[in-house]
Amino acid sequence: MSEAEVLYSDVKFKRETGNNDGGASSPADTTYSEVRILKKQPSTEIPGSQQQSVSSLRSKVTPERAAVFVLSVLLAASLIALGLTWDSRSKCPEGWEHHGGKCYYFSTGKSTWTESREECRRKGGDLVKIESREEQEFLERKLRCTMTEDEDKFWIGLTDSETEGRWLWTDRSELDSSLSFWFNGEPDNYKGSDTLEEDCARMGERGGTTDLKCWFDKSCEVPHKSICEKP
Figure 1: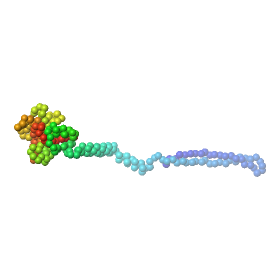
Figure 2: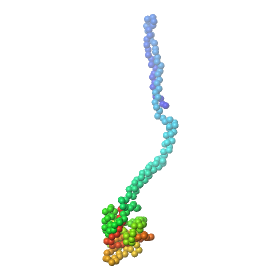
Figure 3: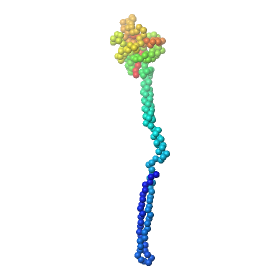
Figure 4: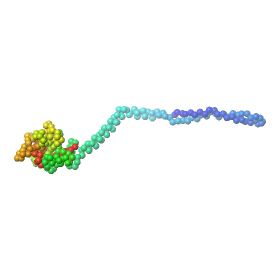
């Protein structure tokens, strides 16, 4: 412990004393010795054991460990945010089915291609646009279990009504030939007994197909079920 020292010097007081014989008085010295007062103040030094403990703690918290801690916190926050985002995306409205980041609606009533598209748009989506083999697999499996007869097919968002043979999706993007799944011999624009051209695409094969090829062209005026989609 450190000490603060306060020193008082010798203090001398003089007083006179008288003689018994009535003579003159003579001075007498009274001396108070040196007074020393020590005032102790708290020490700012860390005791040996405490200093070693703090030093040990500091040695354990290295920059590398601090960086790992910060990264762990950031990773946890990212996972939580991702989980919340995925949860919000995975919820589809009632009657819609979620798959691959999209919501799908399989109608039960039959309408023309144009009416079916209008209904999808009223629901906040559009007729389905098939953008991958995986998506085609999902839809084909779904329909094979839904169809009750050969003509129980579903409209998709593909048409060549503007230019014969130039098939466009509802967003006006052109059909990628590497991602087309026409049934053998389709599209054939077959008129049959009427004069209506087959300008709209429908899909589905009762019992399923091994090669996923289950698209057929058909007159847009023929009532069919349909597949809507939205993000």
